[in-house]
Each structure stands twice: as C-alpha cells, then as structure tokens.
Length: 116
Length: 112
Image 1 (cartoon, chains in turn blue, orange):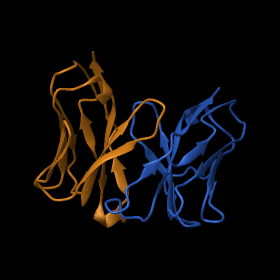
Image 2 (cartoon, each protein chain N blue to C red; image 1 turned 90 degrees about the horizontal axis):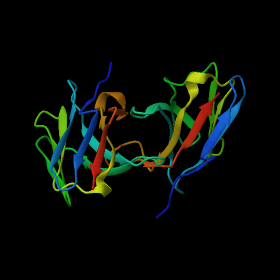
Image 3 (cartoon, rainbow over the protein chains, first blue to last red; image 1 turned 45 degrees about the vertical axis):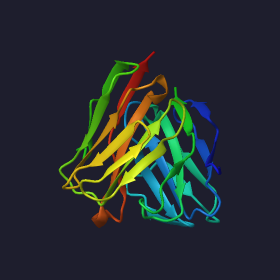
C-alpha cells in the first residue's frame, strides 16, 4: 500500500537554528496537510494545500514557520528560528480531495523535533 | 477551547476486559472519524461514521455516532495487547469546509 514519506524521522536542533522537514504524499493525492502534535495531545493543523495552493494556514505561526508545495507534489515545512516550544511531532498527511468522508487522510510517520 | 472532548484521557486494563471510550462535543459534525496511533507512528484511520445513530463494527471494535451527531463512542470487547495505542477522534464540520477538529485522544494500555 502506498505511503506518505517523511524525512527526517528525528531532528535535534538548538534554539534559534533553522530546521526543515520534507513530505512526499501518496501519488495522485491533491490535498496535503502539515500537522503539529505535542505529546499527549491531538494533531493541530498548521497548513493545508490543495495542489500547490495554500487553502488554510490560519494556525501557522508565520513569523517563523513557512511551507511550500511548489509543484503540487512534495512539500517542505521550515522553522526559522526554532524555539524550545516547537519541540513536537510534525505529521504530514495527504488525501485525494478535501471531503474527509470520501477522502480519508493518510498520515506519514512524522518527524520528531527536539529543540535544545 | 477543546471542541471535541475525549474521555478518559488514560486507561490501563487487563487483557480480556471490555472498555468504552468517549468523544463528546456541543457542536454538530457532518461526520466523525476514529484513528489509532501507535508510538512513533502517524494516526491510522479506523472508521468514519456519518449518520446519527450509526453503528459500525470492526472485529472487536464497535463505533457509535450519537443521534444528534455531537458525540461518539468506541467500545472494545475482550481487549488485547495489540489494541494498545492512542485513540483519536476527529469531527468534520460542514460550515468550516469539512476541516477536521481533533480531540486530544485516549491513551489505552492493555496489559497481558
């Protein structure tokens, strides 16, 4: 079964440094999501793409976070500068469409970020 | 404000016991999904319920959507260690373009 690929699996960085995460969704999936999950909590949507366009980034801290999906396929999420509070699991998910019933989300295994 | 409240937050029981976890809200959802997440992995969809009062079964797991589509429950019969994980519910709201609203999850541990 096709999977959502994410890298790296783990990242340790010092505060004030830049960090980037990469996601390759399931082929043909037009919608791509970046979520942040703090230990013991549910996922929090950071940004949603439909093809190469951002459709929701209302919860993205734009002073330090940026996301792009230039060709409508893979995506990169960047944090600069990283802060201690950014330590979390960053999950990427993809779906064929935007209707969660007919287009369920498929998640990658995430990137565990630790900021020291 | 947590729009979807999951309870209990944590549950540890012996293998073979039955359990029920809950997902409650004051909001109406067009559909509600249950996911299971194992440590170090992403959530995996278990089921989607759409109709008020709907009941779906997945082997030993029974999912129910409330009549008013504001709440849901997950019942596990004869729990097994392989059921261990974080159970998340997520509701889709029609008037927010079907954006998923996530609960904080129930961490379930089944002891052999």
